[in-house]
Image (cartoon, rainbow, N blue to C red):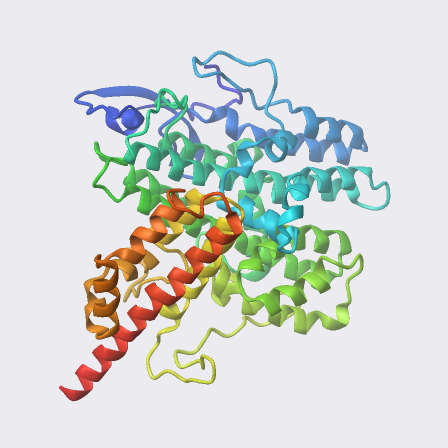
Length: 528
């Protein structure tokens, strides 16, 4: 494969365990293989070749240069056809068509993951009958900006190519890694699925591609997702001592976590927790990528830049549909459903946005304070923040977020996205386990499945005993849910009933019994 950009010697030949590359074969490797990785700069060296993916940002750079020269038609053509990012088949042969920014948002690949599903659902405002009409939202937005001859429409089109197209496709690679790893764990016939090649079909390659799309080439670092986070970090003073945006530093750390998770000879095999690790890394990575979107939305609201308010609202507000309904509805009405922006509602809208940070997986400190407008950083949630008029004496906020898992599983099942719904049930997402030191302690989440099978439920007598005796199975609820998610029950042909069944079991058999067990435990502790 010929390098697509002048890397000044940055490409390196890396030797590493063959198992890390051949894990999709299900073969125990005893030797090492030599694989040409890519040095993306800033200390990031991939294990697999991703020059072609990184080179896509050169298209963005040349689009900006074309617009600066007054040639928006050239920029539009670059967007639609591509120029710098070559594509190859599984044998390494160059394909005739280049990878283009437009193709990232119009192909089927980007739709095969949870974030896109939720985005489309949010754009449809929860109307399942219209979800598919929003599949091309990113491409349509970019083209509408190129067609806008007034003002800076073309510049916004280039920005949107990063914020909508490149952003979502990068996320797609993260969840592809999860899915590929899960196939290995399930002992699937990878050759039949076209994933027999360790370089082109493996979880390691997908993670490397995500990082390449995120960082781009050293020559094009001033555009793209990494640059977006750098600029936003400066606006909100969320940068490290070395000048790197905190978001970028964390994403580089998450990339290293993913590499480490897949570095073992038995990675992704049955009996390992690699899939769970990648799942946790993926949604934390996505949350960090959402931080610059929120920062830029706030900044453009202050600047009253209508086009960019629309852009960043389109990028992040739909995702909040799986959070609090009333808050999402207000944000949608103010930022998405109207063609104008009412600056008089800025503080109220900002308050609604800040309320949803926690649901999206980041904090007030992550977003920071907009320096230019002297807008202070929002306050974090106090440990005894009331829940339905009840003020807890201890910090149980993360535990209370388990209901978000239930809500999001329901949405995913309604969208017929059963794989991510199953991952969410098995591994959790919203309810983060306590870490005394987040910098050093391992990340973990409480999962609904762990509540469904824990022996602690035995404390919920007599209810637990009655349920188990009736169903003759201590893990009856877990089996019901898994069978339904796998399409092995009587609800498999009716999506609405399937979603209702799974949600009801989670609410009334999983969480209910676990809550009773906790109450019983509390009583026992008090008596003791």
